Length: 335
Length: 293
Image (cartoon, rainbow over all chains, first blue to last red; front, side, top):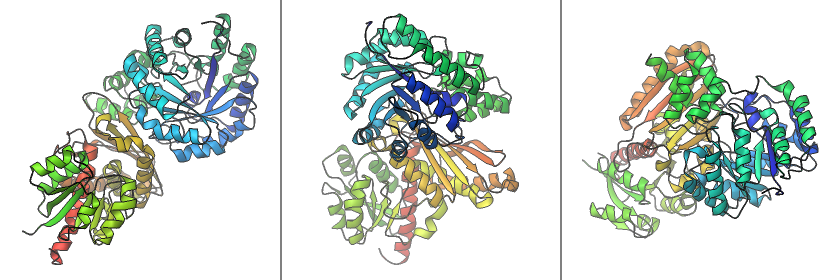
């Protein structure tokens, strides 16, 4: 309902890390973080795109260690909470400790939508450290609203401060967002948020649907920089929510200027819905697979769409980037 | 033929599957299934005429005829109670928890060096599936860095694994270095809930020190170790044979379990159990040869 405070969570330097192949520099992140803080964005997320510890053959090596990037941001931030993403199975509590020492004060612990119980240790540890902790359920198009509500309740019981639903494949349409957000809101006592991808062109529409369904945390990135076709464009959302009568406390003009001055120059490719991105959303494939699929398609002389459709058919989940080679190899053998 | 009496501590899925594998062993005989409460696993063991106890490790330590115990409980239980008690009683521990009181054991790599250890640790399922490949690459081309991704079906990841993902990644990473021989190791685990459940799949990526060795010799070394692995894990096979890209070698393996007690997609549980049995049989052969039975 209008008048409600909506917390915009910027993830330009986390989800956007995929789009720059994990090559952010200290200077770039310091400028972006300083700008976001000045514009009143309450949470600023930074880590490898696949979360802490994501720097690897499988997900791509980071140009600069995420801990150095965090430290570079921490010194620029006065009011925002520096936030990291952690996927149990990739990142560890040891990584979280280092992130804390580098200035992170919030963590979003992400699991596949049906696997919330792998987050208990990490959420509990974050709370012990006095950090804010969110439970982050990925690929939420793959489970029913009832199932998601059950998983969200588990994360609440581990101590999560809010639950964030992620449409990691950019597959959902507004109705699907609404029923999922409402189911979780009815099941838990903590706030609920939403993370969109623009693979079908619905990132902003889905984010607005989430807010209208009661979500109070919305993820976005400057220029929409992110995996696949990118995320909800945060400067757009700042304007849209303002016009719809919601309070975000962010500086709309400031975010526009920041996107133009600090993010446009670092973009490798325009953040559009190219054919591969469209297929991610259509087939329900984890958005960060995209650039790896393009690489594999080139290597094996395949059509990226064929690889993406097969990954979707096999129901691959976030983190299974290694299976792109498996699929490409298999397709190349059957040619 | 003489057999060595063994105990299984922890009558859950792992422990029960171990029991069925022990029934098939030429060298091992089920002397005791020990739990701490009445359970399905205890009942199942009793129905096969295996002696059972709910006194846990104490029942094992009291049995003078038992020489080897498989610990399928938890890391804290092995560290605090089972490990020390078994050692005190002169019973060799084959530890399937991530406790790692004793050295890591990956049978196709280092079993011969561990025959006299009082406590050996079976690393993790992902470690058993991937470290032999890391080693096979390392022994011919060196390994500056090795990374593995283990994909396990959600249904075959038990509550112990789920509650402690870091134990899996950290133990496996260390063993990639200590046993696999890589200068630096990294392990990633992903749970996939697809139905029907996916077979356990593992990707191994190694940055070799000497790419001039060439893919031919690397593949030869890998094929050699795969045939050794197949001796105790018949369902082990290369999904994607070695691919070389500069100094990076990628291999993808898949493991279909033997379906002794657990479903065949649980190749992760099958391989750690099969490795534990292989290790115990080696130890049993030594005990028999020394006249200890």
